[in-house]
Amino acid sequence: MTDTSIESEKKASFFTKLYTGTGAFDIVGKRNRYYIATGVIIVVAILGILIPGFKFSIDFEGGTQISFPVGNAQVDTAKVRETVRSATGVEPSAVQTAGTGAAQTYQVALSELDNDQITQARQALFETFRPPAQDGRSAENTISFSGVSSTWGDQITQRGLLALAVFLVLVTAYIALRFREWDMALAALASLIFDVVVTAGVYAWSGFEVSPATVIGLLTILGFSLYDTVVVFDKVEENVRGVLNTSRRTYGEQANLAINQTLMRSINTTVISALPIIALMVVAAGLLGVGTLMDLGLIQLVGVVVGTYSSVFFAAPLLVSLKERRPQYKAHNEKVLARRARAEAGEAADAVAGADAVQLDKAPARPQTKRGRRRE
Image (cartoon, rainbow, N blue to C red; front, side, top):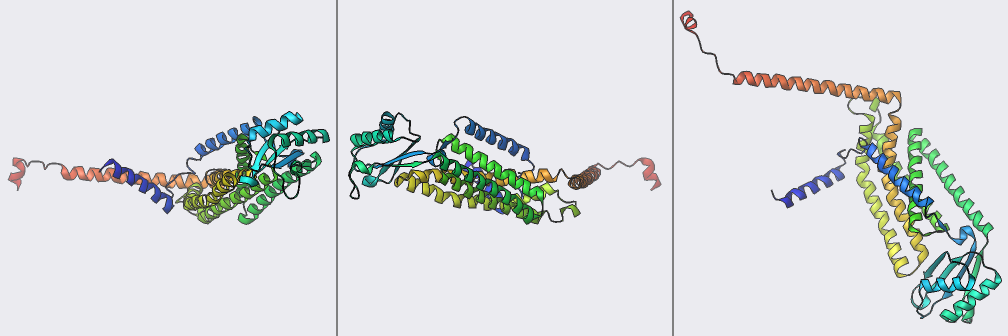
C-alpha cells in the first residue's frame, strides 16, 4: 500500500468517525486537557482586556463626531487624523470611512469640543480637503458636527450591562426549568461567561471600538451559543436517562457519546453561520467601505466560533464533572468499573485455559514401555 493510500485511509477513517458519531472521540475522558486549554484562552483574553483595554465609541464615553464628504479628492486616514489633531489639539479616537467613490465620507470621533475648537476644525478640514458642495449646502457647511454628552454615554453603558445581566439570569432560569437540573444550568452559565470573556478579549486585542452595535452583536452570539449548548444537553439528557439502573456505561461515557452524536451538527451550524458573517465583513466593510459593519462582523464571527468550542469542549465536560461529584454517580462509576474488572478477569482466565488446552493438544505422545505391551 502506498503512502498516499494510507493517508487517504486515515482521513476517511477520521471523517467516518466524525459523521457516524459512534463515540470515537474521547472528549469527556480527556476533559482535563480541555480545561487547561480553556484556562489558557481565558488568561489570554483577560490580558487583552487589561493591557490594551477597550476603545469605547462616543456613544459610551460622549464626545464629538465630525463627518465630511471626500468627493474625488485623494484623502487618507492619517492625513485626516493629523489635520484634526493640529486644529483642535485633541487626538481622534477613531477615523472611519463610509461609502465608496464620490459618495465616500470620513467620520472622525473624538472627545467633546467647544465652539472654538469646532470652528478651527471646520476651517482646517475645508482648507486641507476642499470637500464638494452637496444638497444645496456650501462646501464648508458639508462638514458636520454632532455631539453626544457623557451623561448619555453613561446611560448607554448602564443599559448595555443591564441587558447582559438580564440575559444571563434568564438563561440560567431557562436551562434549570428546561432540564430540571441545576448542574446543567451552572454548566451553561459558565459556558456563556466564557464566551463573553473570550469574545471581549479578542475584541480588545483587535483595537476595534466598542459601540452599541458591538453590544447587540454580543447578545446575538450568546443566543447562538445557548442554542448549541441546549442541543448538546438535550442529547445528553436523552442518553443518560436511566443510566443509574444499568452497569454497562458510566454517566461520562453516555455524555461523551451524546457529544459525538451532535459534533457534526455543531460544526455544520458553525460553518453555515460563519459564511454570511464573513460575507458581511468582506462585502460591506471591504467593498462598500462601511467600517461599522466590520466591528459587528468581527464580534459575531469570534462569538460563533467560541460558542461552538465552549458548548462541546467546556460545557458538556463540566456537566460531567459536576455530576460525578454526587455520591450516587460515584457509586455507579465504581459499580461499572468493578463489573468490567470481573469481565476482564474472566476473559483472562478463559484465555489462559485456552492456551493450556492448545499446549496439551500439541504435546508429543509418550512412548509405551515393554511392560505395557506385555500387559496388552
